[in-house]
Image (cartoon, rainbow, N blue to C red; front, side, top):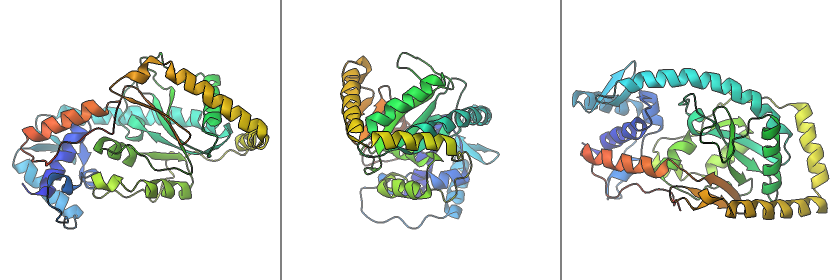
Length: 329
């Protein structure tokens, strides 16, 4: 099999681990870069949707994959077709619940935008799924913004706590980045796929474009990925009253008082993070600095990539190197 066919099959493998069969358009959009299956620097020819459809048909003839209603999955994995249908139904209900909560987050000061990430962004939720959110925050106010966001979630009785084993329909604020440092340092196939699925919920076009421009490394892993041009679906409307609250809070905190509060909030949160046992889990990552706060103490990344590497080898796909995690500690 050539590199393009390998990359198509490997892409289906990646999502098969998530019980997520792909349409032909999704295979094209999230196609793993064929260069990851070659040690040569020879550029890959342009890949068209017709090329993907041709190779999907060949893979089906070779009995590597099966399909149903234009969704493709590994052979003997027919049940995941019905899993995806069910999870799409669940996700529709969860989106409605999330958006009702998310509108209140506009009242938090210094929030410049936020995306939905994780299973909800993929419409791949089950009944136990929570709501993962990535926030973009004004520089030098990361810790202040986080405290206000957590306070709002607590008032709404929708905050996921560290003691929760599962937290269905709760807000999980697991990633914050500074507006002047949008680049994500933790590169991997896993992160490339998941950031490619980010859904802008309260994000300006300029911020959206700046985020993906700062993270063009995604195309090192995903050959055809391009940020979406339209994103009105599941995008909350600005609320003048809530935004006015945010503006008033910023007016008060854009001062020496705000500087003192930010410094206290940083020290307070760093102390809690240092004393948190999950911080030392080798299967995850906790990051806390002035540009980024990330809380993934039990990441699925290492398991998924190990399973991915194992499966592509069994299918006879030759890789010059195994896919590594993004630096979990």
